[in-house]
Amino acid sequence: LSFDRNLIHTSFTSQENTIKINPLNPHQLVIEVPKSERREYVLLDSLAIRFQDSSTHRMDTFFYSQMLEENLTNVELTIDSLKDQMQYIVQLVKENSVIEEKIVLAEKNQCKVEFIHVIPGKYRVKLIEDQNKNGRWDPAQWDKKVLPEKVILWDIQELRADWKLKLELKP
Image 1 (cartoon, one colour):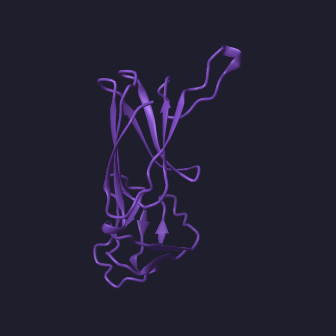
Image 2: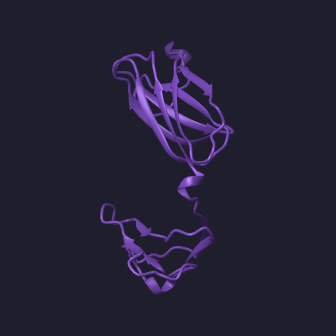
Image 3: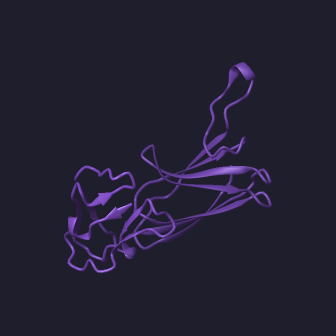
């Protein structure tokens, strides 16, 4: 992966050292953006990025708005009464869409999960007992007489800006 800095256009002025190839993943371009309350953009010209096989990508524009930390919230969950050493998937869900997901292993019959920088709003917490440890919910397999993986949902109180909410949940 290589790139031409002159073909990457942004709405912010300082581009020095803000565009680089990720040293941990050489197939990933990292564009660091300054803090701003305005709506900003990054425009990638079609020749801005070249892959190892000399192919390029299509021209694209990305618009984004940053949210200040004081406009976000953190949620710390402790889920008790779990099966010890069982793998669980904990999801933060808003309007039937998974916003964030963590895979955890229950220790001493509980797990702790933290979701940081969450946009305020109404959410649910979904807990999936990942019996086969494949990192996703599996439906029933009636031909093999296997039940679906257990799912538990909790409605949690509406999240507000600049909160650090600590919740204890039990199945």
